[in-house]
Image (cartoon, rainbow, N blue to C red):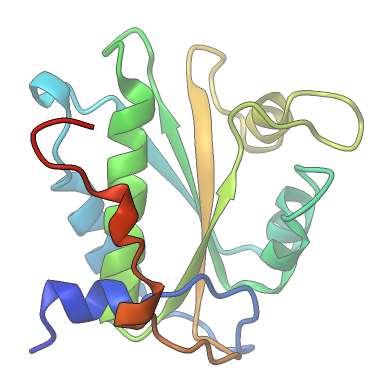
Length: 175
């Protein structure tokens, strides 16, 4: 069994995916993991929109001016949204759920990449979140944090090594 440290060292952002469908069982496992994510006061403000339709993934890939085009080649996109009325730290809660999905995907042999949505702009000048909400029929009360692209990797990325760790970022007792 792979330990958490090894999982974190070997998980890398994958932007090229094989043209291979991701099994529903694996998607369901990833979503169950997300539903187990901790959240402030157990409010669970997050919700997830799973997109597998190729045409919709292509439209979603246009949600930003830069850095989202690869979503068109992913078999799955999971849009992570949250209800700010449920919790004032919805951003943190949605982010925790998102990284847990990425770690679960990696453990299942899948690649993933986070596409930042909040505070980004679509090519048409609209806020990226608004663009996505219109495409997917997401009610206006929700905010979109990110999209997690998923699929079988079609690229290899070297694992992180001990030399990559930024130990100077660690402080004890005082800065």
